[in-house]
Image 1: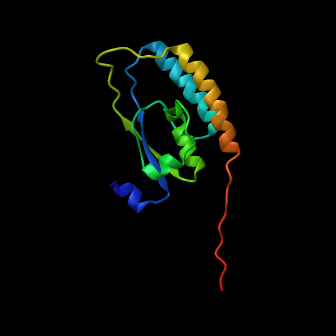
Image 2 (image 1 turned 30 degrees about the vertical axis):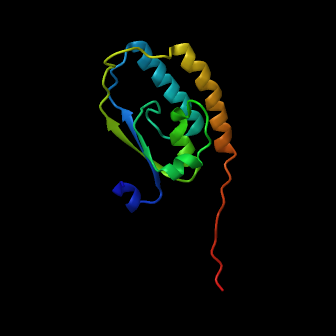
Amino acid sequence: MFKIFENNPQIGMVMGYRKIRQDNLIKRISSKLANFIRAELLRDSAPDSGCGLKVLSREIFLSLPYFDHMHRYMPALVQRQGYEVIFTPIDHRSRLGGKSNYGFWDRLFVGMFDLLGVWWLTKRAARTEIKEIGV
């Protein structure tokens, strides 16, 4: 389907990041702080984990531990599986209608507990090395 995956089997996900944010000041500051804390703990190198653009195979997605709000931590979870994640800048557009169901405090508390859980998972990841033995 995507040539990048066929040519590079070690790449597990391509993810967008909102290079020029179109959000209000509070949302931009809280997002920068959250991304900084997440990056420091998980070392996933994701510039913006909240971006909705994520492309990965069904097989890889189903191999990830599932929990609500896991979209924030997918780069770390995919890397935990031994794959690389490629980040590409995208245009961020302001919301055309409606309003967000989450505020600062909603995202903060849910995100903190999930972050600790993902941090624990990444530290506990089993790294199996397979060696071929000649006959």
